[in-house]
Amino acid sequence: MKKFLDLISEEIKQAFEAAGYDAELGKVTLSNRPDLCEYQCNGAMAGAKLYRKAPIKIAGEVAEKCLDSGIFSSVEAVPPGFLNLKVKESVAAEYLTQMRKEEKFGLEMPESPKKIIIDYGGPNVAKPLHVGHLRSAIIGESIKRIARYAGHDIIGDIHLGDWGLQMGLIITELKERRPELVYFDGAYEGEYPKEPPFTISELEEIYPTASGKSKEDPAYKERAMDATFKLQSGVRGYRALWHHIMDVSVEDLKKNYENLSVDFDLWKGESDVHDMIPAMVEDMKAGGHAHLSDGALVVDVKEETDTKEIPPCMILKSDGAALYNTTDLATILDRMRRYQPDKLIYLTDKRQELYFEQVFRCARKTGLVGPETELLHIGFGTMNGKDGKPFKTREGGVMRLETLIAEINEEMYRKITDNREISSQEARETAKTVALSAIKYGDLSNQASKDYIFDIDKFTSFEGDTGPYILYTIVRIKSILAKYRQQSGRNADACALREAGSGSEKSLMLEIAKFNAMMEGACEESAPHKVCAYIYDLANAFNRFYHETKILTEENEEKKSGWIALLVLARDVLEVCISVLGFSAPERM
Ligand code: ARG
Image (tube, rainbow, N blue to C red):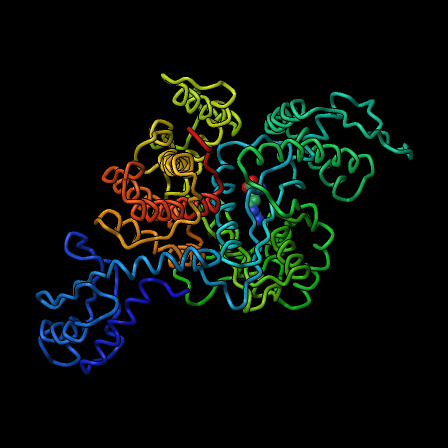
């Protein structure tokens, strides 16, 4: 289905042409003076230079050609040469009627859907999730859902950090504490126990202890590095322990991500590509791309056009060990072989920008990725506390994700039960749903690359540009629809849209009509904040209409059912939007 702006642009383009001017001048945009008009066209201003004519004259001639337009109720030429436009009520109503009939409200599906892999989450096994993991999960999940809704084939991969020194550290600490465990008996040839020798809470205590010790004690660190090496070279007992660590940890991670409504199609990790590294490195050497520099193997990735220094991409350290880079490159190789994606998207903190630049260049230069595959790193800013510094606990420590979520749930529960009769179970569930909207919307409504302030009071407010406000609006619509059903016995879905009878009703309709253009843009630019901005405007437009209109007590049945139809569409569009943002609305709140 055509985008609304394109539809009206077409008419103005024709008018330019009919008046003897270049049709391309007739591009229509939203009005930046909503008090004067709904849309505007500034083409006469550009035409003035081209045709050496006063812009107001051109605008006047174009306006004249629109006198019996089927689309506009008014086309006004105003000095110095703008065209101020208003569309007919009937056009908006027809467009929305069509939207309701179309699948995905008129969002056109791509002719050739793209295969996209999105790498987000990126937690490290055996370390608890903390607030630093929040943005990757929230933004990545939303980008994935938007692309999927827009018709692309998108695969989300968590890309676990499951192969590095932290594994060696855990094994070392475990050996220190319980050397008698069969895993450490090199002569043992039997099967290893099915039950892991630790719980998740033990694991979460073991890791920081080991990490602390390794910082103080070089010999301890040496042992941890040795254990990492043994694990990676396949020592049976170590591998068996690794599997236990993975099982216990992944189960816990799954629970945590589930609480955030974040789910991954692939639970792959760094370990999965370990065996691909030697051959990949050999190819890089054979292709003449990798060379030794101070004992380390590197690939130069700087280009003549660089304005800043781009250091070489290190492939192997001088002791032959693989690095973070190496794993990412091998993962690219694996993804290209298995899925032949058109695009790879990575979500990390923006401090990894240079790192990904190096990795991408290296992948292209060494032929892991061809020119037809797009590589995109989306670097997000920091989540700060009210003091403007990275978000911390009151004691100044790193806050666990579980703690943060629990605190917001609590705050939401307090707000929901304040002065109200509601069963505590329902309140708990509703609080959880609304809290998730508060966290996610608070994050997603900002452009990803910017830092933002995580302000619990603001995010949980039912007023303003917040998740709870959006949900409150949806719930309000749902409640009107439910009352309508009760009152009239009619099915709201069967109601037909009518021409707007008031300014606020028309504004609401014109907001809704932006849906397909908005969603297409949000997908192309991987920009969930565009969906947020759209639903905020939509919710505002709805609430203005609602406060001005006595919907349920309206006596003219036809009028009433037209409004009900509009509400149905507003609700459906809002619900699709929040679902691509990664949260949902309760029935009541
Ligand atoms: N595990 C990494 C970390 O904690 C993040 C992984 C990001 N993704 C990637 N493909 N490098 O820093």
